[in-house]
Length: 240
Image 1: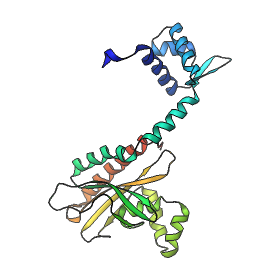
Image 2: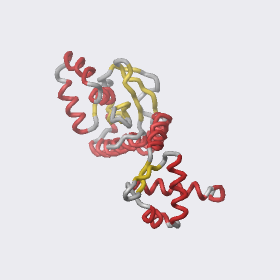
Image 3: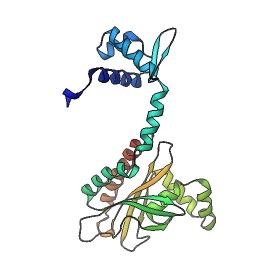
């Protein structure tokens, strides 16, 4: 691997990383932090500036990241498929708890399951990718409703005013838990997944028979689910 690395490119990337950690660094400081001589750092900075990856400030002369990185960052976010990103976290949750893991999105007044990692246990919740249910139903539906636009929420609150309190609770604690709401004997925990713009684009959930849903397990699952949902969100560009 190392024999294929182009040293000049690697050094230029190091300068970008240093500028990402601290804004407006001068030539001497960049040379000191990178371990390169000033002449080399200067040539690399000129090259990066030519491609708008860094921008030069005058009086005093310092450098900061350029707008080309913003453009590339946006392209990277658009190219990252959130389902692919979620696959790893969902599989880790399934392996840890051996329970059903689901990812759902809001779709025209319904929620659509787009990812499913089934439990390997004989007694399990039957579910599969592609199934639909009404928005607001189950733990996933409640989370997706709680983080929906205000006009969508208003439609549901008008029909059932008690939902407003549920929405406030979910947004306050950051997750939803249901027990036997959709199917007798089945419980679920769901957490939101956010985009780079802070919008809830999906829910990540764990579902299991209530016979295995102890208070101790609920706490452990909730903690791990929230961490997984946050890691997915951050990979999508969300900055909490």
